[in-house]
Length: 114
Length: 113
Image (cartoon, rainbow over all chains, first blue to last red; front, side):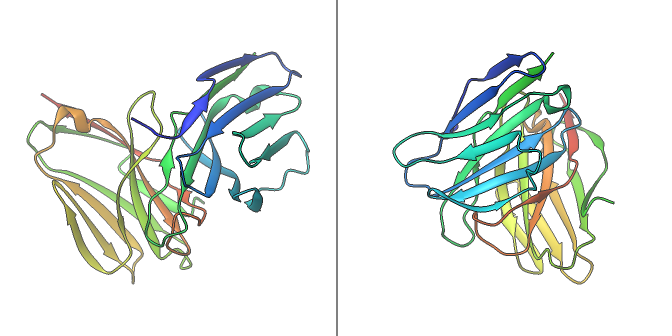
């Protein structure tokens, strides 16, 4: 069973609505990633954090996507104004800072934008 | 062109048979490779990593890496129906889980009883 907890499992939004999903990383893991997996199973890296700091992120100039990992609270990914093309499985993964260690993924939040 | 390419797209093997999956990177910066498996309705789960030339064996799974050609393969012996899943090759520029992974498009494996 995955120790990375993502909520909700399913999220249905209308176009233009805000969509927010949360992730609790595995205990003791300072690194958190968000990936988008589309209906063709293709992965797209979105952003990663070390503790509360952003390490890398895609160009979010559209400003529709935002993410944060506050201390003592779940990490979150928010889409301000959902579009049909945002329909996908959003995967959160956590890991350590130890070399050769693997990432652990949650079950994902499946977003459907109608 | 995708930086990490997998073949075949789908594969069917009989129970107890050998499944062989392939992955090639077109980016020489990618030196560290992982194999992930994703069952329907779940997130991906890491099977194994391979960072050095040659073979690496973990149970029924054997990975092979040729750094000169940037070709990685995964061989599953004695395939079981529970091995039926999507298999992804993922590559990064450095080792460690804090480095961004670039995934291939996946190989869908079906193991038939």
